[in-house]
Length: 416
Image (cartoon, rainbow, N blue to C red; front, side):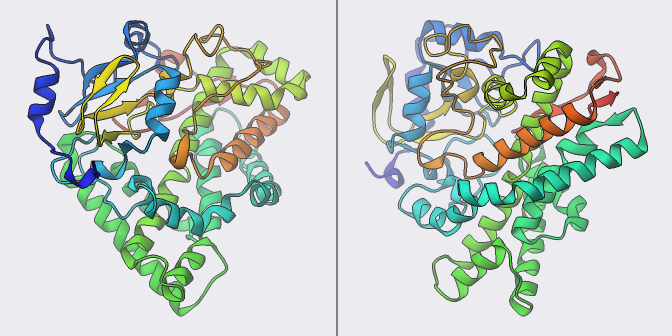
C-alpha cells in the first residue's frame, strides 16, 4: 500500500488500544539519571518489543525497544519516513519538517539527494578533514587555557567545534552563528505550546539560507553549499525548495547531535576519573572506548526517528496496523541484553560492538564518520591538555536542556 493512501484515522489507534487498562504513558520518559535510560525502557523490552506511548504532540505511537526490531523499523521500507509529513499524520515535533527535507524522504527521492553529498562525507574525505578538526580543537582548548578555570566545556569546546566544522564545510559564516543556532534550537523543540515560535524560526532560517544561496550565486565559493547550488542550477538535480531544505538540514544536524553526544560522553567520563586515567595511560583503548561511550549515550533519545507503517506488519509478536506511528528507540536497543552482554556496563574492550547510535538502513547518519572523528579528537585533546579535569560544581547543580530532540546540560563547568 503506497504511503499516500494510508488512512490517517485516530480511530486506528483507539481500536488498537481498546483493551488497555490505562492510557499509554507519555513519551519521552523522565529518567532518574539523564545519562541512563528510563526504567520504562527495561520493562517494555522485557514485556515485548513494542508498547503504546503518547507522543508530545498527543498522538499515540508504538515504541520499539528490542535491538532486532529497531533495526527492522529503521531499514524496512514498510515503515515510511515520508509518511509523517502527510496531513493529519502522527508527529513528534509541533510542525512537520516537510517532504522536501532528506531526513523525511523515502527512496528513490532520498537516494537521489543523498548521492549529491555522499562523497563529501565519505571516510576518505573525513580523514582528509581530520587535521583541520584537530587544529580547531587545539585552538578552542588553548582559548580555554588562557581564560583559566573554571571554564564551560560546552561553550568552550563541545558546541563550537562541530559548528565551526560544519560551517566551513557548507560555507556558512561562523560569525553569524548566534542567529541560526537560535533558530535551529527552536526547530528541534517538541513543545507543542511553542508551535508559532517554531514556525517563525523555520521561516527565518529559510530566509537566511535563501539570501546566502543568492549571494553565492553572485560570488561562487568552494564549499558544499556551492556544490548543491550547482546541482540545482546546472544539473536540475534538485528543486530550489529541496536546496534550501538540504542546507538547513545539514547545518542543524551537523552540530546538534554531535554537541549533545560529546557532552554526554564528557560528563560520563567526569563521573569516573579512573576511566580518564586509563584512556590517558592506554591510548590504544581510545577508539573502542569511544564506540562504547557512543553505545551508552542517551543524547538522542530517539524522538526524531518516527515512522509510519504503510501496511500491517508483525513486529516482535505485535501486530502493527497500516497507518500506525512507530518510534524505534536506538538508545533502548543499544542496551538490549540479548545483543550486548552486561548492557549497562562500560567495557572499552567490548567485542562485536554493533551499536546503532547513528541509525541503520538508508537513513544511516551521513555525518557518522565526522562525528566519530570529532569525538576522538575531543577526547585526545582533553586528555592531553587537561590531565586533572574535573567538574567545577556538584553534578546535581547542572541544568539540563529538555523538551528537545537532543537533551544535554546547558553548561558543563570544569576545572583542572
